[in-house]
Amino acid sequence: MHPWLSALLGGVLIGAAATLLLLLNGRVAGISGIISGLTQASRREEWTWRAAFVAGLMIAGGVAMHWLGQTNGSPASVPFLIGAGLLVGFGTRLGGGCTSGHGVCGLGRLSKRSLVAVLVFMGVAVITVFVVRHVAGAAP
Amino acid sequence: MKRVLAALFAGALFGLGLAVSRMSDPNVVLAFLDVFGRFDPSLAFVMAGAVGTTLIGFRLASQRQRPLFADDFQLPTSRVIDAPLLVGAAIFGVGWGLAGYCPGPALVALGGGIDSALVFVPAMIIGSLIQRYGFSARM
Image (cartoon, rainbow over all chains, first blue to last red; front, side, top):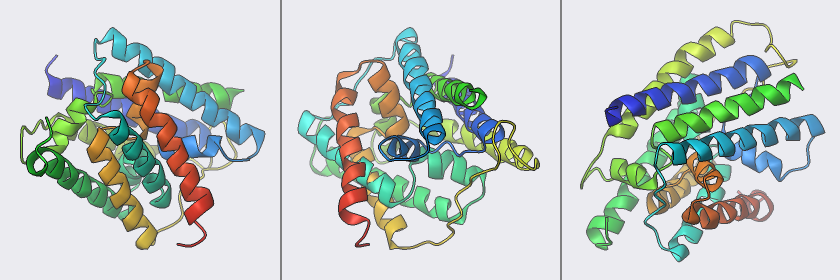
Protein backbone atom coordinates (compact mmCIF):
# COMPACT_ATOMS: atom_id res chain seq x y z
CA MET A 1 0.00 0.00 0.00
CA HIS A 2 1.25 3.50 -0.77
CA PRO A 3 2.47 5.17 2.45
CA TRP A 4 0.05 8.06 1.96
CA LEU A 5 -2.89 5.64 1.64
CA SER A 6 -1.92 3.66 4.76
CA ALA A 7 -1.48 6.99 6.55
CA LEU A 8 -4.98 8.05 5.54
CA LEU A 9 -6.46 4.66 6.49
CA GLY A 10 -4.67 4.68 9.86
CA GLY A 11 -5.95 8.20 10.44
CA VAL A 12 -9.53 7.11 9.74
CA LEU A 13 -9.11 4.26 12.27
CA ILE A 14 -7.83 6.74 14.87
CA GLY A 15 -10.75 9.09 14.19
CA ALA A 16 -13.22 6.19 14.35
CA ALA A 17 -11.75 5.09 17.70
CA ALA A 18 -12.12 8.61 19.12
CA THR A 19 -15.68 8.82 17.79
CA LEU A 20 -16.58 5.45 19.37
CA LEU A 21 -15.22 6.48 22.77
CA LEU A 22 -17.35 9.63 22.62
CA LEU A 23 -20.49 7.92 21.28
CA LEU A 24 -20.36 4.95 23.67
CA ASN A 25 -18.77 6.36 26.84
CA GLY A 26 -19.08 10.13 26.36
CA ARG A 27 -15.34 10.64 26.89
CA VAL A 28 -12.65 12.38 24.85
CA ALA A 29 -9.76 10.22 23.63
CA GLY A 30 -6.95 12.48 24.81
CA ILE A 31 -4.15 10.07 25.53
CA SER A 32 -1.99 12.28 27.76
CA GLY A 33 -5.07 12.95 29.90
CA ILE A 34 -6.03 9.27 30.03
CA ILE A 35 -2.52 8.25 31.16
CA SER A 36 -2.45 11.07 33.68
CA GLY A 37 -5.82 9.91 35.04
CA LEU A 38 -4.28 6.55 35.83
CA THR A 39 -1.89 8.09 38.37
CA GLN A 40 -4.66 10.10 40.03
CA ALA A 41 -7.17 9.10 42.67
CA SER A 42 -10.59 8.93 41.05
CA ARG A 43 -13.79 6.91 41.15
CA ARG A 44 -13.04 3.27 40.42
CA GLU A 45 -15.17 3.28 37.29
CA GLU A 46 -13.27 6.28 35.90
CA TRP A 47 -9.94 4.55 36.55
CA THR A 48 -11.02 1.24 35.01
CA TRP A 49 -12.10 2.53 31.60
CA ARG A 50 -8.82 4.44 31.28
CA ALA A 51 -6.82 1.31 32.14
CA ALA A 52 -8.84 -0.69 29.59
CA PHE A 53 -8.26 1.94 26.88
CA VAL A 54 -4.50 1.99 27.51
CA ALA A 55 -4.36 -1.83 27.59
CA GLY A 56 -6.19 -2.05 24.26
CA LEU A 57 -3.93 0.62 22.74
CA MET A 58 -0.69 -1.03 23.88
CA ILE A 59 -1.66 -4.61 23.06
CA ALA A 60 -3.32 -4.04 19.66
CA GLY A 61 -0.82 -1.36 18.64
CA GLY A 62 2.15 -3.36 19.90
CA VAL A 63 1.08 -6.51 18.05
CA ALA A 64 0.19 -4.57 14.87
CA MET A 65 3.56 -2.82 14.66
CA HIS A 66 5.35 -6.17 14.71
CA TRP A 67 2.84 -7.66 12.29
CA LEU A 68 3.49 -4.74 9.90
CA GLY A 69 7.25 -5.05 10.41
CA GLN A 70 7.62 -1.56 11.87
CA THR A 71 9.90 -1.99 14.82
CA ASN A 72 12.05 1.14 14.50
CA GLY A 73 12.75 2.98 17.73
CA SER A 74 13.68 6.63 18.13
CA PRO A 75 17.03 7.82 16.78
CA ALA A 76 17.49 9.89 19.96
CA SER A 77 20.11 8.79 22.51
CA VAL A 78 19.08 7.70 26.02
CA PRO A 79 19.75 11.07 27.73
CA PHE A 80 17.72 12.84 25.02
CA LEU A 81 14.94 10.26 25.29
CA ILE A 82 14.71 10.90 29.03
CA GLY A 83 14.73 14.68 28.52
CA ALA A 84 12.16 14.44 25.72
CA GLY A 85 9.92 12.19 27.83
CA LEU A 86 10.02 14.64 30.75
CA LEU A 87 9.18 17.55 28.41
CA VAL A 88 6.32 15.68 26.71
CA GLY A 89 4.81 14.60 30.04
CA PHE A 90 5.17 18.07 31.57
CA GLY A 91 4.11 20.04 28.50
CA THR A 92 1.05 17.99 27.58
CA ARG A 93 -0.32 18.27 31.12
CA LEU A 94 0.40 22.00 31.40
CA GLY A 95 -1.15 22.60 27.97
CA GLY A 96 -4.06 20.24 28.63
CA GLY A 97 -3.56 17.88 25.72
CA CYS A 98 -1.39 16.27 23.08
CA THR A 99 -1.69 15.24 19.44
CA SER A 100 -4.82 13.21 20.22
CA GLY A 101 -6.64 15.47 22.70
CA HIS A 102 -5.96 18.81 21.02
CA GLY A 103 -5.25 17.42 17.54
CA VAL A 104 -7.68 14.63 16.69
CA CYS A 105 -10.44 15.44 19.20
CA GLY A 106 -10.08 19.21 19.68
CA LEU A 107 -9.95 19.99 15.96
CA GLY A 108 -12.90 17.62 15.43
CA ARG A 109 -14.87 19.73 17.92
CA LEU A 110 -13.75 22.93 16.11
CA SER A 111 -12.11 24.19 19.32
CA LYS A 112 -10.10 27.38 18.74
CA ARG A 113 -8.08 26.67 21.90
CA SER A 114 -7.04 23.30 20.48
CA LEU A 115 -6.22 24.80 17.07
CA VAL A 116 -3.85 27.28 18.77
CA ALA A 117 -2.24 24.43 20.78
CA VAL A 118 -1.75 22.32 17.63
CA LEU A 119 -0.16 25.22 15.72
CA VAL A 120 2.19 25.93 18.64
CA PHE A 121 3.35 22.35 19.25
CA MET A 122 3.69 21.57 15.53
CA GLY A 123 5.60 24.80 14.92
CA VAL A 124 7.92 24.29 17.88
CA ALA A 125 8.50 20.64 16.92
CA VAL A 126 9.47 21.69 13.37
CA ILE A 127 11.90 24.29 14.78
CA THR A 128 13.34 21.68 17.20
CA VAL A 129 13.97 19.18 14.39
CA PHE A 130 15.52 21.98 12.30
CA VAL A 131 17.89 22.92 15.12
CA VAL A 132 18.84 19.29 15.89
CA ARG A 133 19.39 18.24 12.27
CA HIS A 134 20.49 21.35 10.43
CA VAL A 135 22.05 23.61 13.05
CA ALA A 136 23.58 21.15 15.53
CA GLY A 137 24.09 18.74 12.61
CA ALA A 138 22.97 15.58 14.37
CA ALA A 139 22.39 12.51 12.20
CA PRO A 140 18.94 12.51 10.54
CA MET B 1 -18.71 -3.66 32.17
CA LYS B 2 -20.01 -2.38 28.83
CA ARG B 3 -18.07 0.84 29.37
CA VAL B 4 -14.85 -1.05 30.07
CA LEU B 5 -15.21 -3.24 26.98
CA ALA B 6 -16.05 -0.18 24.86
CA ALA B 7 -12.91 1.57 26.12
CA LEU B 8 -10.81 -1.54 25.48
CA PHE B 9 -12.16 -1.75 21.92
CA ALA B 10 -11.69 1.97 21.23
CA GLY B 11 -8.14 1.79 22.61
CA ALA B 12 -7.36 -1.23 20.42
CA LEU B 13 -8.72 0.51 17.32
CA PHE B 14 -6.72 3.64 18.18
CA GLY B 15 -3.54 1.57 18.63
CA LEU B 16 -4.13 -0.27 15.34
CA GLY B 17 -4.58 3.10 13.61
CA LEU B 18 -1.31 4.43 15.05
CA ALA B 19 0.56 1.34 13.79
CA VAL B 20 -1.11 1.27 10.33
CA SER B 21 -0.44 4.99 9.85
CA ARG B 22 3.23 4.50 10.92
CA MET B 23 2.86 7.16 13.65
CA SER B 24 4.42 4.55 15.96
CA ASP B 25 7.72 4.92 14.06
CA PRO B 26 9.49 8.05 15.39
CA ASN B 27 11.62 8.22 12.23
CA VAL B 28 8.50 8.77 10.12
CA VAL B 29 7.28 11.44 12.57
CA LEU B 30 10.64 13.22 12.56
CA ALA B 31 10.73 13.10 8.74
CA PHE B 32 7.34 14.83 8.72
CA LEU B 33 8.63 17.49 11.11
CA ASP B 34 11.82 17.94 9.04
CA VAL B 35 10.17 20.50 6.78
CA PHE B 36 13.52 22.03 5.77
CA GLY B 37 15.25 18.68 5.15
CA ARG B 38 14.07 15.32 3.85
CA PHE B 39 10.42 16.13 4.36
CA ASP B 40 7.96 13.20 4.27
CA PRO B 41 4.38 14.52 4.17
CA SER B 42 2.73 11.16 5.06
CA LEU B 43 1.60 12.25 8.49
CA ALA B 44 -0.47 15.09 7.08
CA PHE B 45 -2.66 12.30 5.68
CA VAL B 46 -2.98 10.74 9.15
CA MET B 47 -4.20 14.05 10.54
CA ALA B 48 -6.55 14.55 7.57
CA GLY B 49 -8.02 11.06 7.97
CA ALA B 50 -8.40 11.36 11.74
CA VAL B 51 -9.79 14.90 11.89
CA GLY B 52 -12.00 14.30 8.84
CA THR B 53 -13.54 11.36 10.71
CA THR B 54 -13.98 13.14 14.05
CA LEU B 55 -15.46 16.21 12.34
CA ILE B 56 -18.29 14.00 11.05
CA GLY B 57 -18.36 11.45 13.89
CA PHE B 58 -18.41 13.96 16.77
CA ARG B 59 -21.19 15.92 15.08
CA LEU B 60 -23.32 12.77 14.75
CA ALA B 61 -22.50 11.55 18.29
CA SER B 62 -23.35 14.89 19.89
CA GLN B 63 -26.83 14.86 18.37
CA ARG B 64 -27.69 12.29 21.03
CA GLN B 65 -28.89 13.40 24.46
CA ARG B 66 -26.41 11.09 26.16
CA PRO B 67 -23.81 8.46 25.20
CA LEU B 68 -24.92 4.83 24.85
CA PHE B 69 -23.15 3.44 27.93
CA ALA B 70 -22.74 6.47 30.20
CA ASP B 71 -24.88 9.16 31.81
CA ASP B 72 -23.37 12.20 30.16
CA PHE B 73 -20.88 13.57 27.66
CA GLN B 74 -17.80 14.96 29.41
CA LEU B 75 -16.20 17.39 27.02
CA PRO B 76 -13.50 19.95 27.81
CA THR B 77 -15.18 23.24 28.71
CA SER B 78 -12.19 25.59 28.71
CA ARG B 79 -12.06 28.03 25.82
CA VAL B 80 -9.35 30.36 27.07
CA ILE B 81 -6.07 30.75 25.24
CA ASP B 82 -3.76 31.44 28.17
CA ALA B 83 -0.10 31.14 29.15
CA PRO B 84 -0.27 27.52 30.41
CA LEU B 85 -1.79 26.43 27.07
CA LEU B 86 0.88 28.20 25.00
CA VAL B 87 3.85 27.33 27.23
CA GLY B 88 2.67 23.74 27.69
CA ALA B 89 2.18 23.22 23.94
CA ALA B 90 5.62 24.72 23.25
CA ILE B 91 7.34 22.47 25.84
CA PHE B 92 5.53 19.46 24.39
CA GLY B 93 6.70 20.50 20.90
CA VAL B 94 10.36 20.51 21.98
CA GLY B 95 10.06 17.00 23.45
CA TRP B 96 8.16 15.71 20.42
CA GLY B 97 10.79 17.14 18.07
CA LEU B 98 13.67 15.64 20.06
CA ALA B 99 12.39 12.06 20.26
CA GLY B 100 9.64 11.77 17.64
CA TYR B 101 7.26 10.33 20.24
CA CYS B 102 4.01 11.84 21.44
CA PRO B 103 2.03 9.97 24.15
CA GLY B 104 -0.10 7.60 22.00
CA PRO B 105 2.64 6.26 19.72
CA ALA B 106 5.00 5.98 22.71
CA LEU B 107 2.49 3.68 24.45
CA VAL B 108 2.08 1.59 21.28
CA ALA B 109 5.88 1.24 21.03
CA LEU B 110 6.02 0.30 24.72
CA GLY B 111 3.41 -2.39 24.03
CA GLY B 112 5.61 -3.59 21.17
CA GLY B 113 8.60 -3.79 23.53
CA ILE B 114 10.64 -1.16 21.64
CA ASP B 115 13.74 -0.12 23.65
CA SER B 116 13.43 3.63 23.23
CA ALA B 117 9.82 3.57 24.48
CA LEU B 118 10.93 1.67 27.60
CA VAL B 119 13.03 4.76 28.39
CA PHE B 120 10.67 7.45 27.07
CA VAL B 121 7.37 6.39 28.69
CA PRO B 122 8.54 6.28 32.35
CA ALA B 123 10.19 9.71 31.84
CA MET B 124 6.93 11.02 30.33
CA ILE B 125 4.90 9.82 33.33
CA ILE B 126 7.43 11.41 35.71
CA GLY B 127 7.15 14.66 33.71
CA SER B 128 3.37 14.70 34.09
CA LEU B 129 3.71 14.07 37.85
CA ILE B 130 6.24 16.92 38.17
CA GLN B 131 3.73 19.20 36.45
CA ARG B 132 0.88 18.09 38.69
CA TYR B 133 2.66 18.24 42.04
CA GLY B 134 5.42 20.77 41.42
CA PHE B 135 4.23 23.49 39.09
CA SER B 136 0.47 23.49 38.64
CA ALA B 137 -0.21 25.63 41.72
CA ARG B 138 2.18 28.37 40.65
CA MET B 139 1.07 28.91 37.06
